[in-house]
Length: 497
Image 1 (cartoon, one colour):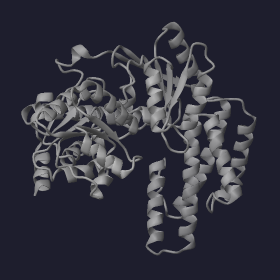
Image 2 (cartoon, one colour):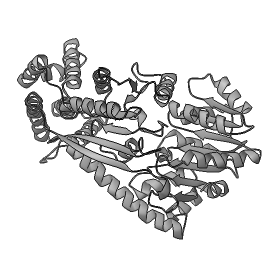
Image 3 (tube, one colour):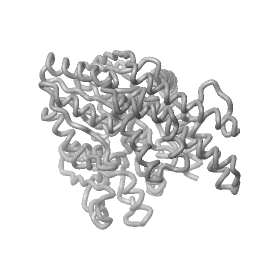
């Protein structure tokens, strides 16, 4: 694979943990021997740090520099000038190129890690537009999960100037001897009465708002109105307002749509997260209404009798989501029956991560850390990197992570991964699963609350993944016949013109 990537710009599709970075290392070394520089781009700062550590330790006689948007521009300019390999976040590079801070004339290879991001207006696309001015420069995209749509794969190749595709699956004969078994267990949980009571009250509120939106002709009648439909309705309403419509019906529809979205989010928290996450959100809605920052419908919403009843239940109940106790049980069993094992628990919401970390820290034998994003008082880049290093070194044996832990991070041999909830994305599901089975057999538990959107999300993700795998199998066969799809050939030809 490395030989092919060194000859022609390539999209490399390889399952998580099977060596995409090492393939890139060989290609980087080849370019450096030819006297040209290399730029390695990664979407998050922890990934940038990880690549910096890998390439600086394994490359011989090469200066490796790292940069990101937090550095002063002149410092970034000197990093590019003084190093053979530059590891960076794409937004920083895109901004610098746009401002003429430096050019890419000396760059002989750009590596796009997590290349599935190379669509739309993502910074990878802007960097590639500048880099294409550099005649003879190679590009290399790396991903484990390009998505389920063929058009998306073509778009990635065209956007990043990748002229061929090389891929392997875990079933290929030159890969299968080096893969490990991953056992996936689905755990279905019954919801306690207090939670179902709260969900029922929230559903009543939501049905009322949806009925009013239908009456206002802001929504089409439907047996089940989804959050996506509410968002589309909101965009349509805002467009009508932006283009000059000023009517009482429109203003009321905007208010009701905002209330419906908030209650829909509350339903999701109650169904998939639990009382603590819901209580924090409901208290915030009440506080915003009281302070007048909750929009036109804020006070109306919190004055509803159902909302008042919900707050009473939340204030009096000691019930938590059954997922909490199940996570505690699974983690306790793992670390006490298999000393030395490592566990990752994924949750979509930071408040749930906080709760899980607090609960798990009380279990004998468990040393737990949190891996969360930087926004709103989260972990800064250096703290995320230190957290991962502490996990690898055994200082922590359990990590509770939000989506920042899903993508590309090297968490060494994680023995057990727990999905606190399902996510309706095949890419995120695959990336979560890829945190185990990298260096030994792994086990995954997926927690699903019966009768909730957990089940719907699991079905959506499974269907998307099945579609993606079918298309990837077809793509693999077509690559063996012709490594460059015709759509990519035409797209790149148009791009060259």
